[in-house]
Image (cartoon, rainbow, N blue to C red; front, side):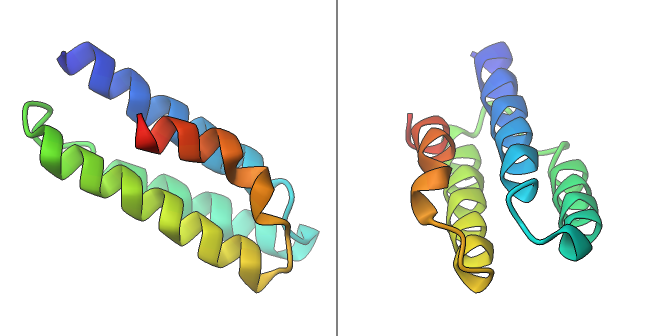
Amino acid sequence: MVYREMQKALRAYGEVLRLVRRLPEDTRAYYSKYARENFVNYRDADPNDVTALNDLLKRTYTHSLWVLNKYSVDESAAGRLKEICSA
């Protein structure tokens, strides 16, 4: 179970970085650094606390949508992230 949750978090991180590529070029460095810092900050989360991990993934999705909307990127671009974070 721990391995599966770790894989899920890594897939979410990779998808967030793919979404960053859709942002305006002058904002990409900031948001990719921001995403990395957030994933690093939560890497010590208890992998056995599925509720906490699901909450983190939901926040990842919600915040990603906020950033996409801020830069007028179609939210449908986050479909894969939604699948990862909702599963």
